[in-house]
Image 1 (cartoon, one colour):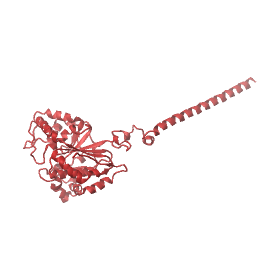
Image 2 (tube, one colour):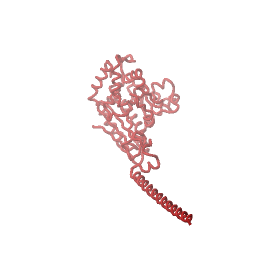
Image 3 (cartoon, helix red, strand yellow):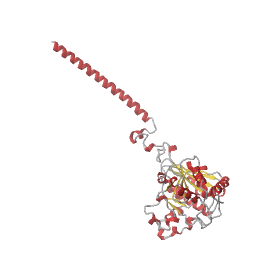
Image 4 (tube, one colour):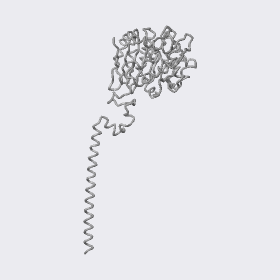
Length: 376
């Protein structure tokens, strides 16, 4: 009988324990469901709810504010690619080059970034832009990302820039040389003009055609350098945050000499001196972004020199001719270069209306009208 009592007690204890465990499991399950519900509610309340669930957390590279490709929910977080031109005077040849170059730039506008184009000018060039912007109707273009064209009339600062150049080089500035002007140095002064003073700006000569998406170039930027180039002043990435340091280094040179018989100290010569004396502060561009006529024409055809392709073309071999490089350059019309330098003719010949149609064909549902900031 005693053993039966013990068995009954043990059975009761087991049942009590089982009930207690079942209650504990049910409580834990309820608590878990409650916590999961709170967690899911917080996720779905955010703008990136589904992205968080299916594409990874907000710490994923795709959601980094500095990353090129950004959600259209946050356009203000897109990377901004910046390009600049320096133009002085109202010479027809220079303005023709600018039009062709700008056309190519807009047709190859970045696919994943907003795009700022800065045009730094003196008074004569500034006035000449009125006709170009009106005739080309750039302000009516509608593209996949925001493109802004900002002009700057720097006539009031021309003497200031000239004085800085004279005091730094200890040489008189000879602006009487064909196709040479204060505008050639605007890239070195860009950090005092373009705001905000962050990141890099690509300085282009007017005789440059851009073929590829600038996103590729921006992926190859060396953020530690003062500037990045290919030893040619017509296609240079300037670090806006370190522009003052560039001038500080130039002032340390005791005697800045010219490589030319005319004694001229060009912008390219100033950058060469820094490149030679402080190579650790300068970076080089990838080959596909280093395509200059003055160098390659001495080697062979463009296809022989760049068999994998090119991202840009710099027709810098005929600047002493008082005619647009896009007209005067013989390589554009040579049979041996029809599939090389001759491809530049596509951008030279295509009308602005056709260029607009092609550029707009790549836009998405949410398109942006090109902003042109130019006070008349």
